[in-house]
Image (tube, rainbow, N blue to C red; front, side, top):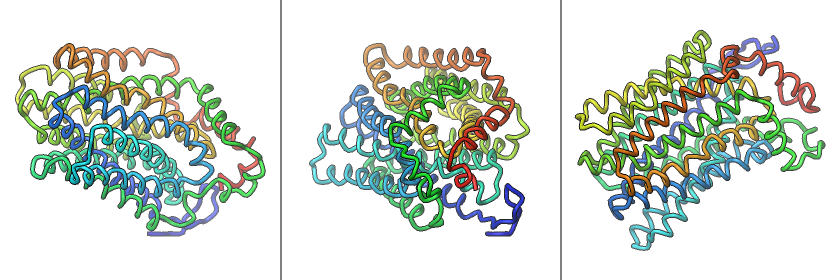
Amino acid sequence: MTADVPGADGIPGKRSLRPLGGVLAAMAVAFTGTRISAVALPWFVLVTTGSATRTGLVAFCEMAPYVVVKAFTGPLVDRIGPRAVSWTTDLASATAAAAVPLFHALHLLTFPLLLALVALIGAARGPGDLAKEVMVPEAAERGRVPMARATGLAGVTERLASAIGPAAGGALVALLGPMTGLVVNAACFALGSVIVALALPRDMGRAEQECSPQAGETGEGYWRRFGEGFTFLRGEPLLLTVIVMVGITNLLDAAFIMVLMPVWAKVSGSGATAIGLAGSVTGAAAVGGSLIAAMAAHRLPRRAVFFAGFLLAGAPRFLILTSDAPLGAVLTVFAISGFGAGFLNPVLSAIRFERVPRRMLGRVNALGDSLAWSGIPLGGLIAGAAVASAGLVPVLLASGAAYFLTTSLAGLRPEWREMDRPGERGALKRHAEEEASPNSADVTA
């Protein structure tokens, strides 16, 4: 779908929704595969080893490389180009994911080998997820789609994957076993690689040097690029506060998804099907929240929506599992939590894209995401050890209380007031950064 419409600078240009559709489609299949694996892999480890600690260790070995590699590949994504990074890393993820069921079928899958393979999956996923995220602003500009709406659609895509993936994962595990879920995960990564390589326009997501010939003449090395991203983040109190808060909640979410939910399903007798149902109900409700955010984000008071979303999305999930509530009540609470969670990522993404200069998106997003995700590898590890020593219910109660206190106390900090003034300070700072850059005329065209 194309049309001649005025560009951002008032000059008529060609509008195309193909780039945004392609990026969202690639995100959808990759996220769906990951959500299927998030049900199949922990369940496989838990039922074959009977160890919550080993289940947490597998989660750690996947997410630690994800975070570390993602943190240091931001400058490379800017330099090589997100399109090339996305399809190559998805292909690598598909290969590593397919190796797990292959070695299992050949009776060669030892626990150390499983840890090595999930580490490879995590190391490839980090740059791939970052590259797709970085392409969203360019795709939005090509389609003349407002940034808040584009980030909202990206949030809807992720939430749809969170609705479909767990249901598919739970059904596959219940009917065909966990290895089937891992085969589907590999197929999803392969399809995502094909979409990015073949469906996206060739001139999209290009390397920085291709976008601006002058970029190669600045002499910017890797560590200088990395340092620029670090320096930029240090000067952004709002972004830093968001990163710290989200880092803590991500740790708790990882503990919940990777260990606490599987242990609850096993102890309660609900099985993997309940894990899939809970994840799908959460994801489906989150789609509704994300759609509202996509359509009305520019009219809503960001700060109020953000903290209300966290209030619904956090502690209630932990607390309901401490009771003997029927599955219907559990699913109702998860639906309410999912609806609140649907508002969070569109708000966060819009703030980040407003405040970060386009030429620095790769390195700044890589650092910010990696810091925010730094607790995820530890979440499963800590939860597994805690459940083994203290039991499930005390860990659920402590985690729910920590979630509530983190998201409530963080809102008292003064820098959150900047959230309700979208783009003011960030737009000025980005304009100054781009004016100071020798490549600004090219990268903002």
